[in-house]
Length: 306
Ligand SMILES: Nc1nc2c(ncn2[C@@H]2O[C@H](COP(=O)(O)OP(=O)(O)O)[C@@H](O)[C@H]2O)c(=O)[nH]1
Ligand SMILES: [Mg+2]
Ligand SMILES: [Zn+2]
Image (cartoon, rainbow, N blue to C red; front, side, top):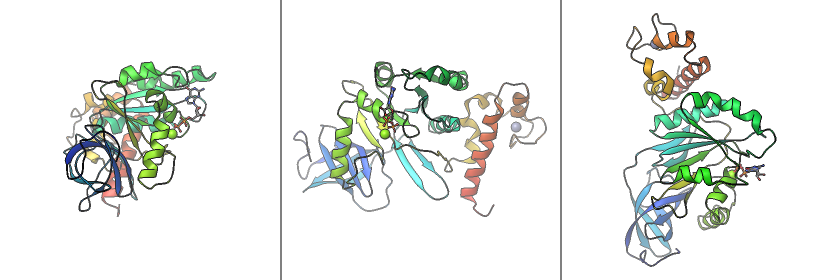
């Protein structure tokens, strides 16, 4: 335990989970102490960003209660769930010009953000890179959907992103190598050292970003924070309710409820408002194809016999 005095033994405190490793959680109490905690009882889901009540005991703390959360951003397929963060207000998808960007991930991140009631921002990093000019036009479709695409050079100046993140509870997602850790280090100096310290304290013994970690934005009176998540090559959202998935595609919303059949799957039904919009060129066909694929993923997990 480090930091100011309030978190003395026997004292109860509220705080925010900043890192998780197996059955251990690093909690930052509201008075600024860092306490390495275990859970009382079993079975609770706890993610970075969760608000918890802890009791301080010899050598650390015990999580007594996870306070109600506004949302939980996580990935899931038929085999595993990977928690990313709780109480999120903004998902930041990081891409860069020097690696092969899987653009389907951008759609999936935007769907995850919409499904959890968050904003979505595309951060186009490495603006100083010679190939950057070729990346921006590829991101235009997300701009047309209404999402902000922010060019950034983490190596030169992260201030535009910092301004945008003030007061937000943000998670950065992206493939490995896009620059998430570099961005975070520039936003919150000393991050790499702190991640290493926490991972040693929690017994992971690894100094890499294998789990999500939460970092307070310095000098933000509104208490903004950013979560760095491990690099990912897939982003499955099998836990989403199939019926809620179309709503998470922003451009479909104006058409939902206007099909002939109330339970229209927007597939082969006659008088489908969504398909009509695709045919008029108002909706990109690949987004509707992804919607169908995500609904199928979700159904397979709910009913593996299908
Ligand atoms: N040219 C350039 N390189 C960057 C920038 N940001 C990160 N990088 C480099 O990209 C590589 C991957 O960065 P890292 O932060 O580890 O990516 P992560 O896997 O997403 O966390 C490193 O070699 C960084 O130095 C940038 O703005 N410009
Ligand atoms: Mg990283
Ligand atoms: Zn329809």
